[in-house]
Every structure is written in structure tokens, then in C-alpha cells.
Image (cartoon, rainbow, N blue to C red; front, top):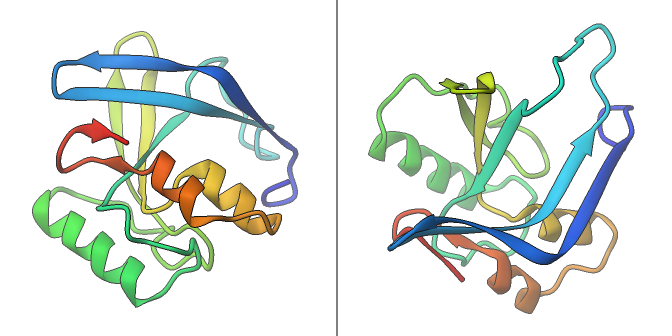
Length: 144
């Protein structure tokens, strides 16, 4: 449950691989939230999230490491960032809205910690090994 609404999270037995060459991504966890009350959504994609950074972030709890990394990301890509979730206590992010063919306007969020690691942290099952396995290197365009 997040924000008082049910959420289902699925760990895929076989990750979905997208992209090509040096820009390959592996999707191994899918989260399906219930709509926010009073905010109806069309069926389909509402947002997508990426993990950024070098894989050294140990905790999803917001701290100076998160602030420095997210600020650096925004400086590297100077566009109009939504920073509403920048100060969240757990798993802060910056985001932007963009138009995608077949999906309409979606939110793209950037975090430092993979979703599975956040879930395991919140349930007390977080480990460095699991974190290293799911960190995506946006700057290099590779998964590890």
C-alpha cells in the first residue's frame, strides 16, 4: 500500500529486455497501483521509472547523497524538472512529463534505488548484493 491505495508488484521470472546496442534495459519488476481517489486514469501506461547513478547508493531514505545525485542529474540535463517528490523521505525522485505515441502524456521518474530494493528495504529484506544486481547505469546506458 502506498498513499492509502493498494499496489500490486510483480517480479518477472524472465525480465523484459528492451533497447539495442549500448542502450539496453532490463525490466524485471512491474508495479500496478490502484488509481488515486478522485484521479481517474485511462487504461494503459501512466508513468515509468528509471534508476540512475553509479550503484553506490545504499539506502532509499532521502539524505545528502540523494540530494547531490539528483541535483547533479538535473544539472546534467537542464530541462524543466518536476521536483515535487525530491524531498520524499523514502525513494525521492525528479520527474518530467512527455508525450508518447499510443500512450499519451506520461510521467518519467528518476530514482537512485531500484523498486525491488525499496520494497525489500521497507520489508526489512534489503541487501547490498540485491542492490548491485538491479542498479541501472543511465550515464553508461547499460544494466548490471
